[in-house]
Image 1 (cartoon, each protein chain N blue to C red):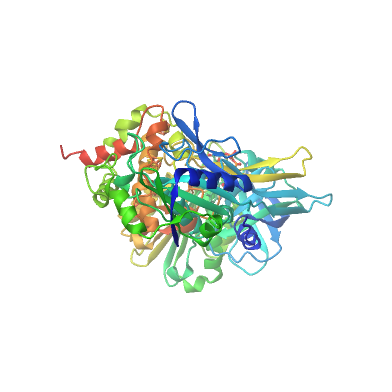
Image 2 (cartoon, helix red, strand yellow; image 1 turned 60 degrees about the vertical axis):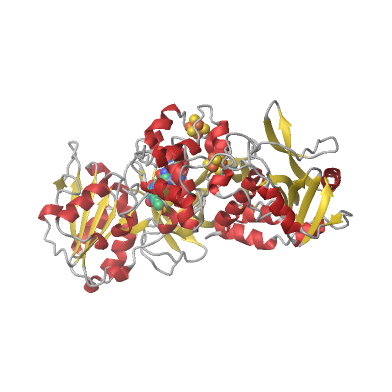
Length: 348
Length: 282
Ligand SMILES: Cc1cc2nc3c(=O)[nH]c(=O)nc-3n(C[C@H](O)[C@H](O)[C@H](O)COP(=O)(O)OP(=O)(O)OC[C@H]3O[C@@H](n4cnc5c(N)ncnc54)[C@H](O)[C@@H]3O)c2cc1C
Ligand code: SF4
Ligand code: SF4
């Protein structure tokens, strides 16, 4: 573990140097107010300041919208050869906020569990992550502090905290991080913990939105409110479009599809994002749909974040409070409001 | 900059998603839309009763299909596949000698230890007889290790009955088989008419000694379980084999989730008492 104090310019030069040699992704402004993790080129602007969470979270660079699982080819004798397709190219994702870092750590947990997922794990092992701490809430949608993800640093190889005007505390946390920072001539930091605490205590309080109950109570309330009028309230405005699933850093459900090439002898099998809010997600062959009602699907989505996956993985909330689902929903359906209503139901 | 050994991940990917070839050695029509397939694999499947495989035709897709033969150490896999959509249509077009991709076996199973020494009641609705056969076969093979063995098998109409010849053989072998249709639809039929729940109230049944195994369409379970409950059969002694949509079979794709559990890993075979706290189960 090494600690440095770098200036903003030093950090940006370093990122640009890394980008010249590697596939490096950084949040880039798109239109008025949205950001995307884009590949950094020589002309890209590196702005470490205030960007709100990107439309699509960085973890989706590790679980792309569509990814090939295998390729096959059938020869003249009818024998089929099948080969797994793996992406093991090296990449760097920089400017990852704590909420998104936690999303990546959770995906690590999900994909390692049980039958390990080679595709995710191969990408993950070949990905370096440069995290960036938040000193102010990014906008009115976020609620990272309410779900304990504000100070999540696990999973980052290098973690950057703005400590005071102009100065950045750079924590090198892994051997991969050491490789990335090899040769930098930044000032060594002798008192990292004091500086970090200084930055954290200067934050506004409360930091963003908070639930009207502590997190463990909140989770218990969601679990206990399986029958509740709240499940009908917000979903009245829902189109079942699945956007909330697609933008969530901890949604990873997928569909599997085959493609046959024009030679009719070769092709591939790939998986693509799917979403539990989509109407046919839980339908089976006789036509029975286990979650036919939008309210049942919304309850499933919220419970997956606050009850089901936390219980399965013995973890806290699996919603990281990034606020994306609320920000992107055409109908402004916000998981924060749903959970808040569940807490307040019957107690007003 | 860094590129760790990829062989480890290739192996993981092969273990999880690569099918092995299965050569079709026998095909038989069971009904207008259900076709029986016997497949020879390169190595034994090593399955237990109630488990399933993922069957694929490269370039078309992959689907979960129940294993219908009893456990054994040869390379055989028997299935009955209903033509219902894109993939199952293509499978129906395959001929003897063609290959399909098979991976698995997956999921939980019926553990014979829970059945030895007891009266066994099988309740099958429609295609549910296909997976239950993988349990009926080993039970009948050791019939003297069980008490009374009964099968209630129901389907929509006489033309939809599966494994008809087998049902006759089993009857001759001493299994009490109650064959039912919802409606004869004016077809010849020498057995009963009614739902699979209908015989349960009058069944000669020792509730303390009975263990039941159920498989059928989603609507069936609630009613059969209620009928068995009314006869004092304990929920600890009722096993259900559930169907859900499944895309991966390895606990990742999310489609088969029943509240907090994944049907493909924790199921498809459950002791009913273990499902009591899962409102989405039935
Ligand atoms: C554990 C298990 C065991 C099964 N055993 C058998 C069996 O022994 N014999 C048999 O004929 N069928 C069985 N099925 C059902 C079989 O998997 C579906 O009929 C098959 O996936 C349909 O594929 P398709 O491409 O032909 O249909 P599609 O064209 O994809 O769709 C037709 C219908 O099937 C449903 N469906 C699509 N994909 C799936 C899926 N992955 N899982 C469930 N339903 C789906 C759709 O909602 C639609 O209603 C089993 C399913 C499960 C989960
Ligand atoms: S984004 Fe909004 S409208 Fe779309 S499924 Fe989610 S809650 Fe419903
Ligand atoms: S549920 Fe919404 S707020 Fe929570 S992690 Fe997913 S997108 Fe972010």
